[in-house]
Length: 242
Image (cartoon, rainbow, N blue to C red):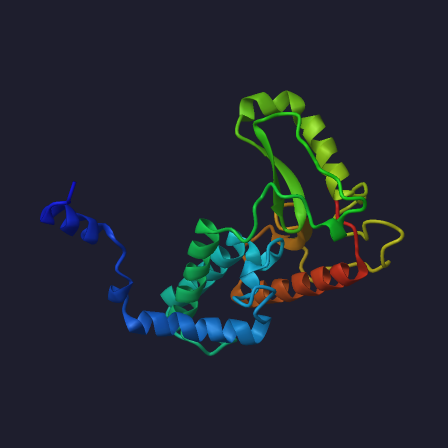
């Protein structure tokens, strides 16, 4: 049965119209993506490091936080990003594009086991409950459930399975101490008494928590401390707490 003119026009109207997106907006995002490629590289996919599954760059939260930082700076009257010298609008366009891309098309399936080279021997990790599924965040495996009510009594089983899959050591005595004696015996002091170290299980990284609001300069300093600790811990294979 042939379609009527009205049906055809209705279908056309429902289709996306990328031709209506302002070219200036595309150029703005392109400038920021170009800067990001020069800074971080193109990753294993050639599309950018944010498409590399299991990395911090592949987390929506990373780019959502970056978008908010640029938005707050722009809203406060700052027009250009001091680091890249690009417009905050350029940076926001790129970050929002990444959030959309990661939300609609995650880099990898959450329930896939790690590559064979990453586990010895290659083991399939079945789950005892059909409502459970594996989810990988920040390079570590977690169990999620579509039935929270039925999960309560089985939380210990889920925790044991997570520990086995991630092969994680026991947690350190305190967040600001080296996790184990085998790890580098470096203490990570903080210059502000209101700051403290915290292990973020979602991202698999150390972060600094402040008990009081922080100025932009303090936030930048916190970022440097976090980057240094996480980079050093990664190179030294410092185990993290559960």
